[in-house]
Image (spheres, rainbow, N blue to C red):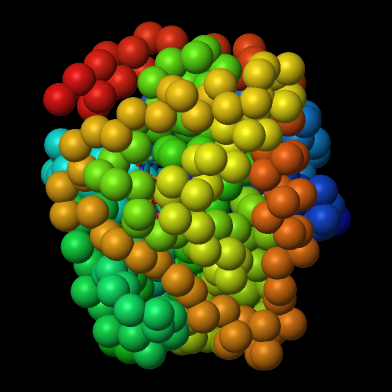
Amino acid sequence: MTTKTILITGGAGFIGSHVVRLFVNKYPDYQIVNLDNLTYAGNLANLTDVESQPNYTFVKGDITDQKFITELFATYNFDGVIHLAAESHVDRSITSPMEFVLTNVVGTVNLLNASKELVKGGKAFDRFYHVSTDEVYGSLHDDSFFTEQTSYDPQSPYSASKASSDHFVRAYHNTYKLPVVISNCSNNYGPNQFPEKLIPLFINNIRQEKALPVYGKGENIRDWLYVVDHARAIDVVYHQGVLGETYNIGGHNEWTNIGLIKVLCKIMDRKLNRAEGSSEKLISYVTDRAGHDFRYAIDASKIQKELGWTPSLQFEEGIEKTIDWYIENESWLSFVTSGDYLNYYKQQYSK
Ligand code: NAD
Ligand code: DAU
């Protein structure tokens, strides 16, 4: 028997597919509706293991299409929403900011309006859960951490669009009493990440013995979390998070880019039976990203203390699992790096 119908947006993407898998398998009494427009980043091959489960439905559609969203909500009368659909790559936001405004801001407001109408119509609505990023807090230049009280200071068109959507979600809670919750997470890594992002891009290039384009001096710092641990946190926040609250999610796992890249090179040399040090020779320092945020670091003590979530996997284990997945899923990598990807790559890395 179905006890809840939950809309997950962006479920064919990297993080979304891990969230869909967790919810479909863990909650057989929930009907999970995955709404995704299948942009370059969305891939139904990420979900072949759950696609025939009776409690899973896929709907192809665009969150920026207001009429379509209104009809979708009327059809399914959702009990809750977990919103992950977004344009998510900082470099693309630098070349095409308007797409980020449309999907990340307008798309989010369409979903908020549809949820508000359900509540207005008397629906006992669980919550609108907005999945956001630590990039809304800006760039750290000292050894402090982002807490839930840190002021917003987005620096890229991507983070500005996510910050804007976070503000709309809070405004709908304050103004219309829409039950909402937000989480802001650090950099994710793991299987199924589109190879425009640092880790899968570099794994793919090492595999093909292609240059490794390190922005600037490679000294920027990121806090990495295994994607399945983020999905576990999303489960906890959806079910136990206090309405109106924000939860920071992070791995307490900071690496300079160059430090992380050297680890990737070393592990790949071992796994591909190449001479030690051969992948490091592929490192090529290139022009820095415009407005490149220096350091992100999350203080995740609130979600740990209040909701009992901590990461389950050490980075050493997570990165081995991740590299193994990309090596074993060469056909997935080859498929997503054909076609449009080649044009993107040429444009991004021939500057
Ligand atoms: P992704 O780019 O891999 O996936 C985004 C998904 O959204 C894709 O499946 C895409 O097809 C879909 N989508 C895009 N535009 C759409 C539209 N107009 N209508 C319907 N679907 C659309 O992104 P990701 O890395 O999985 O990130 C998911 C969410 O988590 C995003 O909101 C992102 O801001 C947030 N986040 C990501 C990270 C990270 O490290 N990747 C960290 C913190 C937060
Ligand atoms: O912090 C959370 C954010 O992490 C998410 O909200 C974003 O959706 C996600 O894309 C990610 O943003 P970053 O910009 O930190 O991730 P990216 O993988 O693009 O880059 C990680 C670091 O590596 C960053 O300092 C830039 C650098 N880099 C990246 C690429 C793609 C390079 O040096 N060379 C590259 O080719």
